[in-house]
Length: 480
Image (cartoon, rainbow, N blue to C red; front, side):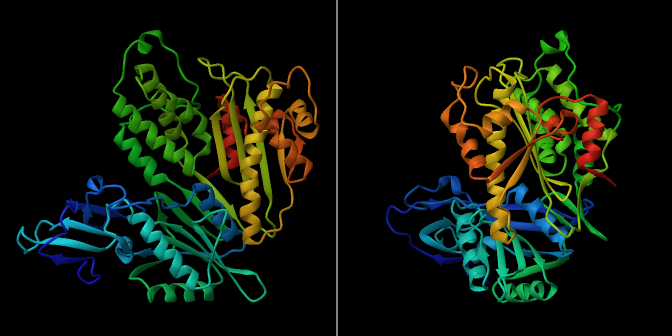
């Protein structure tokens, strides 16, 4: 911190200035196998004592979406590009502060208590630290001729004289993934070394809890280590295994309340796994997350059942392979009145690039549907909104996508999307959902009918029996 001039020592502070406190945080950094590779000490400011309008104003900083990460990897695999990983050391300390902030001297500093720190850089813990670092990195990358995408502020691209993308960056706070032509990757890393103190870890191996395995024809992403840690934490290793996640109902267990803290920890852990690399458990986890308040022993038993299913099928991940063209497939489905308490329906959709899932979604609809066609209509609308983001993002990168085809198994819903019809069964539908008709009319979205047994999004709207669940898992994930 002295090397980077994080703070200046002062004997006096302006009258009425807010003096914030600080503390030391000690932690470990692990590799992909769970081994300790570094012991880290970090001085952090206690930002909760900052005052709005005096010590900070704007605080928002974008974070890389999981969908974007998978799109990034799919494009790298498509062109057989390497993915390089770098880590900016003490990233936040590179950003200058706009505000005048004073802090108490850190514990262990040899100065007496009569002295204070005037912060020059965005110390960890400050409310605006993340934003200041993001602004600093953005400025540097733009100086290196990178373009920040409007559809995804954490994704940057560089084009050559022929307007062809030669390098692409994905930014997750201080971790940066770089893919593209080998020479461009090397030039980018060398340029960033002139600006920041960074660690060049080489080919990507492990980031945000996800293991990257380089294959001959692409990449495999999985969370085997994370899964084993969960089994150990919640004592799952000695339990029997389950072939599906259909909940069990027990009147006696339903009357007994369970520890809500432990329940939330388990559901939160499962949710991260479901969002990152295991879409096959998303529906079951989303249903479990509706019981975070006052869970019962029955609810806990059904959460453990998800763990038992994962223990039976632990070695699965997402495989991204090389391909000449970008093949985008979208599936959407709905389950009419599947929520027993509110009778609301569930929307589910799946987006795949070159046979690898990149986005999946399972969520209760905002209102009660009166027919299957209505619930499917709402689902197509929600899916189309997401597809428009895909279209904008991929076109910004350089793919010429005019129309995205959505596969649905409901002909009535497709008819309502393609025609300006008003009938007794649809006249009450809110105007905002009719946006899908405009997207279809302008040929941004195209709808295609498929049979229910071929709809891969079925498992995001309801519990599946063993055979259907196995079919879904084998179609969208890869065993290793």
